[in-house]
Amino acid sequence: MAVRNIALTDTLETFRTQFNDLAANDFGDIANLSGSISATNLVDAMNETISIATSTAGFTVRDSSSTTQLIGGGDTLSILGTTNEIEAVVSATDTVTIGLPNNVTIGNNLTVTNDLSVTGTFSVGGIQMSGNTISVTDSTVLSFGSENVITTGTITANQFTGSGSTHTFGTVQISGNTISSTDSTRLNIDDTLRVNALESQTGLLTINEIGGFPFLTSSASGGAISAALAIDANLYLSTARTLIFEGATSNTERTTVTVVDPTAARTITLPDESGTVITTGSTDAVTEAMMADDSVGSTQLKTLSTLQILNSAGTTLKTIHGAGA
Image (tube, rainbow, N blue to C red; front, side):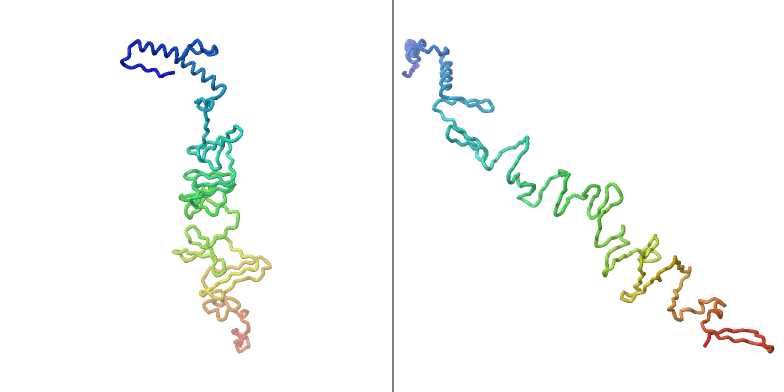
């Protein structure tokens, strides 16, 4: 089959001769076509020929977008993976295995509609999850941004640090160094509370420990008594307890007030006057100003001397009592 060429200067007769020769010799006589070929033009005939050839010696591949590619006899079908995404391995006999590498890199988003199971450590950015442990590889802080963290279980931590001004745990809120309740004016503590010191609202009363003793200190001022501690209740001392006064000097010398074990309900009343309490150990504690006229008679004297004044008839006119010598 020769190459046919019609020059610009060729005559119409030359064109007619070349065309007829092309149809008769190059294309061949259509009468010689197999009866199984139904095509009536060259293009359809070629398509029909390819279809017949591929049905016996080739095949067609199609992807998920319905794009097709004809693979003829003798052609090579290449199945290529993408580095760190998909691996394609050819093995005997006539087998292509498509899988994932040990480390998979996904350039865009990964969407999982069901459960995601990971054996070993699962890393997302700088966050690692292994078993029931979540950690970070690029810092010591795991940040949830502005999102809330909700759990029905228990949160255990070495310490809690908040960046806001107020933090709420249930109905208890902490703001700076102030703890308060959000639903009442009282906080209940079910266990023993041990602190270095306790102060009242404005600091007038302090409860702490000094010198190995529990200590109550009042800083009240401006009233009739400075450093006063007001008690609006009856003061009850338990069994074998006493009142101990330190005095003006803090030393081992103290005054203790105690009672003899009562055998009945006793009441000691202090008079409505200023003065000094006299005890059985007092000496020269009673002065003349403390005694009313005729308040001391012969019966009040420990030893008694009597002076009687008699008249001439021997009748006692006056009796004078005095302390015995």
